[in-house]
Length: 206
Image 1 (cartoon, rainbow, N blue to C red):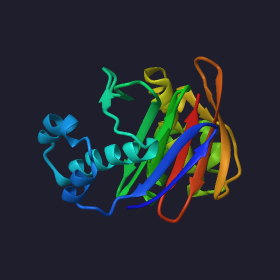
Image 2 (image 1 turned 90 degrees about the horizontal axis):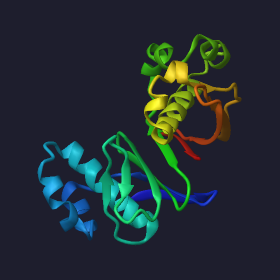
Image 3 (image 1 turned 180 degrees about the vertical axis):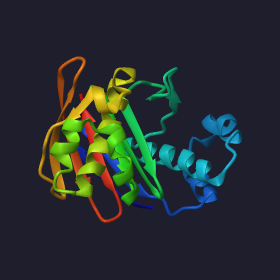
């Protein structure tokens, strides 16, 4: 279990590189019986690894046995509603986040050049000119993850990434904060990001 966890504005965040097997993760999930029926329906080891690791990580992050459920929109929540939570995974990496009062949104992604072929789908023309004029691929990656994280907070009113969410211009660093606007409601959000060689992470509370 290779992980990093930290607290930011009362939000608990854990990033974990999953190196364990399905059997090892099953043994680590002390409340596995709560999920046995749901787990039985998973068809691939990849999905089983994601399922188990997220639940082990959330228990570890909050230091107690918790049950993750999903609402009708597919958003995760804790059965005791003690924290608002958010979950993300990419490759071997997972990220979980919890906040005792506010909504939470998190996204983790492994770097890939494929985003240079996709960015026009999720950035408006204004954003394309502001964020990609210098051809910095890291800005595209952060912008994508920021919109994913905000969608997890806002929901269906932010499903059109290019037209409903705007990322304001920013300078790229290893760690930083960016500002975004949800255009329909004119609400401003501040998001934190972190970039490493293995992944980039964006999270927000609101």
